[in-house]
Length: 451
Image 1 (cartoon, rainbow, N blue to C red):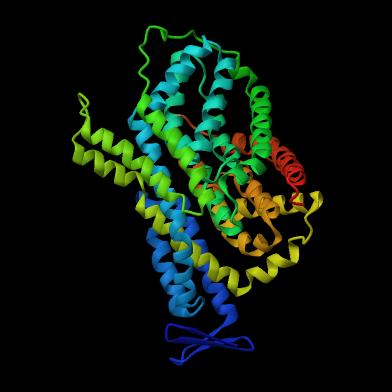
Image 2 (image 1 turned 45 degrees about the vertical axis):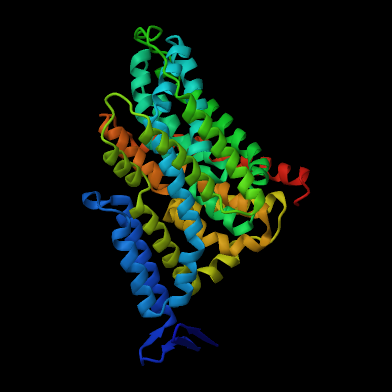
């Protein structure tokens, strides 16, 4: 069998890969090379030495695999082209979340939660769950971790409550509540591309699992942290504060979310709607001066930084590395354990496999590995994988990059997260969420005639 990739050919003869420059690379060496590079990239992303970007080892790692012939140059470029609309969409959502913070939406949410809780930690827990679930669904799990979590610390202090139940809630909901919309999680965007669902159809299938996950998480957090929730030192004077509502930006955000639905149904890449919303709010901030605001040039720099170009490079490079891993043995191994059926039992097994894989290698590589293997089985199977890779990471820190980031943020607020407590809470919530959310997905698919 021969591939022609931009002047490079590769011929498989038994267990050998031969390029016509004379280099010989056995298939097991190609597999081992891809696996080692993937491991290095993931460990680096988890440890982040000296806060260096995740792309530092990922970009050269992808190039090395192309040079070794573990993946063809044209195949690698095809992966990059395939990922480009997704990463542009991700960049747009990240910038949109940054602008929401700059416009005061998260501060407003904190004020409303503090005022509405009326000094009750239990009532505040419910409000935090609503805020975190909505933020995750509409602005992605990164917004919940990076922008909402610091606000939760401040809000809990003002109410006189212990912060632990609320910040653990944001960590869990950043993963569990990311099931609803394609914009909620990068894994969802990848799945949307793989199966070609529209925004409304995706949401219709996932609203049941989304609500199920939130209810399970709330019930468990309410009981698990009962002692912490029974303690309150009394609230500050929160009713005296003036509420500043960014009406213009809220309207633009609503129109942008509606735009996601419209452009999806028209077959237009949804990143255009995201960039449109970013452009309108940015134009408003540039044209209408606000007292005390930082210079416009710095605002634009901050906006560009919010797009996180290094992380986008990491995502594209990781897709190439994972493709090399899959092509060199992992695909055949995974096919032997992934069930073929679309019944409830098969869907639950697929969800569990995805969750286990996410906790072994992180949820982003996990979804990149599994999507090519299940995409032909239909949207229900693909969405079962999403339940596994989105909810599963609540079991361990390494399951999601967002959870690792959450640890750094709470440490910056002088709060320590115990590994044993995080794992114990995950052992209670994750199995129940995996099974019940998959049941909800299966029921929705039945009602919509998809299985």
